[in-house]
Amino acid sequence: MTIGSHLKEFHGLPAFTFPTAGDTPGTAAPLPAAESVAWRIAVDAYDSEEEWPEAFARFLAAVDGRRVRALIVGAWSDVYEKAPDAVIDALVAARDQLPALRGLFLGDIVMEECEISWIVQGDVSPLLAAFPDLEEFGVRGGNELVFPAVRHERLRALTVETGGLPVAAVRGIAGGDLPALVSLDLWLGTSEYGGDCQASDLAPILAGDRLPSLRRLGLRNSEIQDDICRALASAPVVARLEDLDISMGVLTDDGVTELLSGRPLTHLKSLDLHHNYLGPELRDRLVQTLEAAGVRVDADAGDADSDEEEDGTVWRFVAVGE
Image 1 (tube, rainbow, N blue to C red):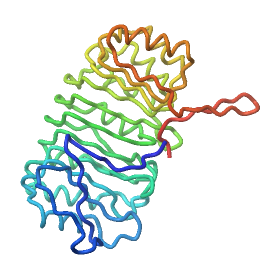
Image 2 (cartoon, rainbow, N blue to C red; image 1 turned 180 degrees about the vertical axis):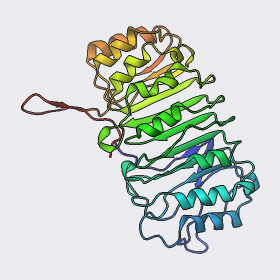
Image 3 (cartoon, helix red, strand yellow; image 1 turned 90 degrees about the horizontal axis):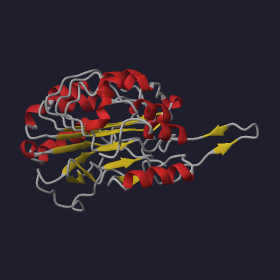
């Protein structure tokens, strides 16, 4: 599986792509009201006619930034080799022009523009510091991603999508002070693409001390999905979750057996573990046990497929890698 389409909506608003410099005059659709959409601003990832800050300047000249509620940063030029420092600087510099901004996504980039594990990122913490009223923040791409521990009073949803999330970033997120955070979604990825954390690095999240408002937790797209389930089995945070997402990873019978033997899951509204490597007997047992308690369960194996070599070595893969 790869990411083949841009965000259709963000922060509860439909996404709308701001016209590029190369759009033919007179062919672009009329601009919607500033507050009615999540504005996607992007340039060509290869051989762009303008840099992202230039496109953003055109946007601010055309749209009333005081009423903008959500922004989606698409591709910047040469995303496969250049961090979005200039993008972040431009956003930070415009903070006073965007007083109503509540949702920000950095890196809505699809495979035709750049594979997820090739997207070069940087230090995203200046964005959280510049927008203290931000309620939702998302970032795609883990290559060189820096995410130190921060305090943010109002952030309610945090999503980090990667094919490999560096351990330093995992520890930074886990060590953050985010009292309003309701939803946390981390794509941890594989060591081949820089995802070098262990389940123990998630301990502050699983303890729940720093995240008193957390109700939805996604720890997914990971090659250590079984280890994560083992840690979740005794994690205090599970008792107050409503939705748990352990999908898209290398999840086997061992991980689910550990999960079922741990803290009760019958209080959940939903459990998502689609794209998995479960045997049919355990899959049926899991679904029947939890659905009988009213839990919505997605245990579809999807396109999860194993490769076995002649020597018996079995290879299993996360949903989104390269």
